[in-house]
View 1 (cartoon, rainbow, N blue to C red):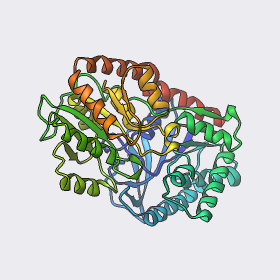
View 2: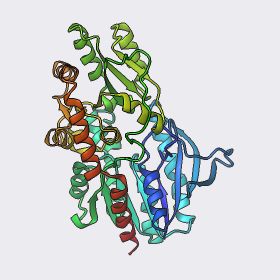
View 3: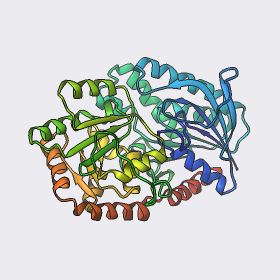
View 4: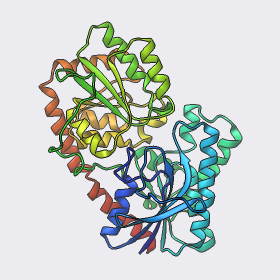
Amino acid sequence: MRILYFHQHFSTPEGSVGIRSYEMARRLIFHGHQVTMICGSYAGGQTGLEGAFISGKRSGKVDGIDIIEFDLAYSNADGLVTRAITFLKFALRSIGVSLTQNYDVLFATSTPLTAGLPGIFARWLRRKPFVFEVRDLWPELPREMGVITNPIILSAMSVLEWLSYRSAYSCIGLSPGIVEGIKKRGVRDENVVLIPNGCDLSIFSENVKSWRPEGVEQPDLMAVFTGTHGLANGLDAALDAAVELKKRGRKDIKIVLVGQGKLKEKLQQRADIELLDNVLFYPPVNKKKLAELMAAADIGLQLLANVPAFYFGTSPNKFFDYISAGLPVLNNYPGWLSEMIIDNHIGYSVPPEDASAFADALEHAADNRALLPMMGRNAQALAKKEFDRHLLADQWVAWVEGASR
């Protein structure tokens, strides 16, 4: 079977972003299918292609995946208008590919929501099976975050969301809330499946060497956040907790923020102004280096802004990286991940926007180090039992194969 796979933010493990699409494409190949990946150039991502762009694109084969990369650079640090233009340019070029390439199934993964456009055209103009994977609910998330307020734009996005879901032969949601959101748009239960992000257990093995950033001493409790420093991530909550810890004189607790994003510079400026020497910023690293960092960490921070749509409507890569590495997790919002953390005794869940409770949890972890290895073992056991990437990928492959039938 030939799969045309659209993911604007695709990356191999050499990049410093999520690799779900890479792993899924590799699993399709393992099962004997041929995959052509259509993507853009994503800050922090690495497609594996190194040749020059010709007429705005370059192509080649990387780890068995045929890749077509458009010269459309994207970064979370870009402004809203710049990002919207990049999304639309990618969608338009993707539609052209969907109408000319030879394939059996078209698979598209969001974000952005415009990722569904080539599938819509392929379904109705070429009668091709289309499978749509939904990573975030749009326009619900930007509306609740206040990022987009124009009613005309929100209405247009709502129409595109409905059309994408109803054009797809089947849909994949990455969290329980996303699955319910798809069903509310009229998609039948049997056409939607939950396949969350998975755990890369082979990358986050117990045998990797470890390292700590400069400024974190060996006796310190090291709490790490690894991901985008954007509006959705609400990283001021970590700095608020750092202020509280400093008031308490806890110099032995360090918060390490690893990644990039639109708000990183602003967060660094705040830390400098408030003399938060217990917060350290580090640039993004690839998966291998990330695994080595987590091997030295004591706890992972699963942080998001206090937006109700996030509670059950996200499936964060970083959470699954933490539990893959056997790290306890500190989570700062309610929802399905919070319930999982509590039910499986793998860390702490604190109320949103509560710096005191956040600091209390870090203090408890620092003062009860003997509990952390047990939480870490519970976390890794959960990763192996329910979120092994290969097991979820096989389920994903079977779902995509079903669309062709």
